[in-house]
Length: 468
Image 1 (cartoon, rainbow, N blue to C red):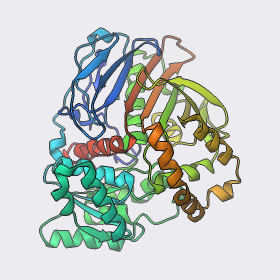
Image 2 (image 1 turned 180 degrees about the vertical axis):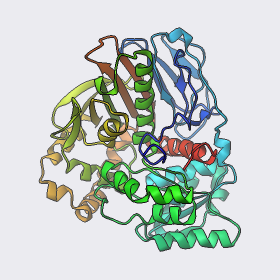
Image 3 (image 1 turned 60 degrees about the horizontal axis):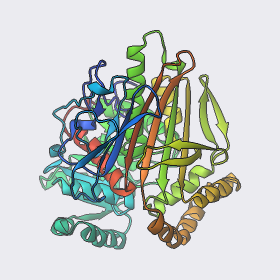
Image 4 (image 1 turned 90 degrees about the vertical axis):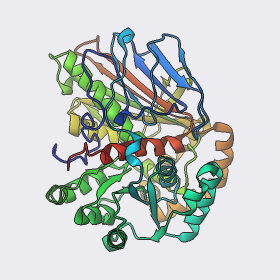
């Protein structure tokens, strides 16, 4: 299992940075340093409520301004698109490590984005284009692609010509032949695809559905990344394609992006730091709490709304003393502090991928995943929906209709609520009360945040640092 990079944690120590355990580091996946986006990172000082906030004051789509720090000021830190923070009690010794992985790795690379017409896929298309990748989009409908194309040009007028030149292919994500045809056609025209990014969700309930995208990639020797946020679906793909990918020498990374991608990297780095400093502890001794917040829908499209509805059909998985335990979703709320820029938010249990993967891959003994949104009546509505029959909520065609019906209302609320995204990971231990480690990452807009994070994973993979 450890030989193939298609579990959620992806063993990104090899991809990101080499960090000395004696130094506190703000870890930048890929060491990508050239831009300051409006994102916030915090590292604990031994007490999870005492944090250092590093924030830039930039608009969500990339205009720059200076980095501001408060209230405890370590040395000036450079932030990256997909930033993860690790913590230490020696905050004054904070430093950054760098690697040869850069967003420049994306330049002139040919990337096929499956599902590129959607909000998630579109954010990836925009970020890849901004960094000079040659993008190809695969999707269901040309009309949807053209609508997205027009939107991208409004958001990034400087790159309008680049967006106009993006070719579109009608594909079926479950049919490997439709993907393979694009790969073969590109190779024949000496424009070989270097990487395929699969963003065509929802991924919930697809355990027994064909994944034609990864199948085509491993059969034709093309690197693969996806944003799968369903653990069973990701695990099924891993079980089916691991050996084929190894035999074909094809690197694959499943479940990247903001969360579960960067959130899992944060947990891996925090727990690794704890275990390196406290050799008397084992992974099963640790508690890892994942807390997520998204204002409004985060600018989600219909597909993300469908995914949310499908997740509500499931009870939330917790790991308690190494055993799986299911609890009702969006029922009991806790108040979590997401840093001074985001503030205190209400979160409740939701069945997210990190709970199972953190336990199964890292061996952590106690894990829980909580989520909240704003305004609070959205939390109430989600809680009420979670009480509906699971058979109703798990009906994807019906949820698609509900999502399309809901979109106008969601857009109105989003206008007032914004699209801030934040995630906080806490590590503690009942056997050792001194273990209080925390990592915090936030971005003012979920949509570009996802694109930036996925692009960082793409840059890492294209650097050649990821082995099959």
